[in-house]
Image (cartoon, rainbow, N blue to C red):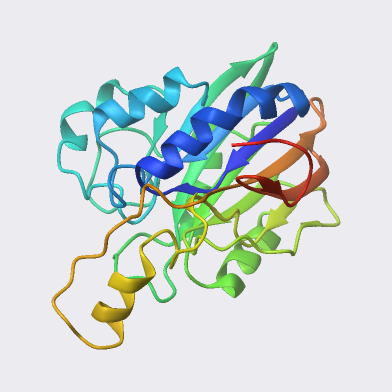
Length: 269
């Protein structure tokens, strides 16, 4: 089974870039299933219902979230009815929505799970490993299982992937918006990448306008971070090939496209 996992979508420019290129990528990579992290899709923080629906309409099969999962408060009103939306599984004292979902793809079950890391993060969450063990105990182990580990620390991401080696098909890191070049397949068959990258403005500070970020972070000015929707777009994703019977990762490749000059392949945004 061939799966494309898109990194954090940042703002309208990320949404538009993904919409423009997804049909071609699905065809070129013969993708059976599409996952995208949508926690920054609505103006850079959170996910409103209409943007969730746009992602589904453009062909995304599963949408994951992260630390900004509730930055748009309306999510509490639609989360229970959003069957393809997966919030972090290890939230404390929160029962709406699901942190792990099962999809049927070409006759095979595909599980997608969203987990928040703890290192260098402001959010208080249950221990990621503990929640995964609870999931396995409650739902059993699914052969094809993709985990979006939304975390700051690359070492925490690698540690989490190693401890789950052989129990999930892949652990893909999100959150830092910078695609890493460390794809691995561990001894027992779990694929790993520290970060999938982002879909958003190429010349930016993790998707946000550099000038606004400099004034706010360097010079301490009261400046709201903004997104330049006229910037050159960037689309980053991970290509996965999974054995449908064993769930082992057979291939994992980080891929990125910059409008007008693809860095890994031939496509245009």
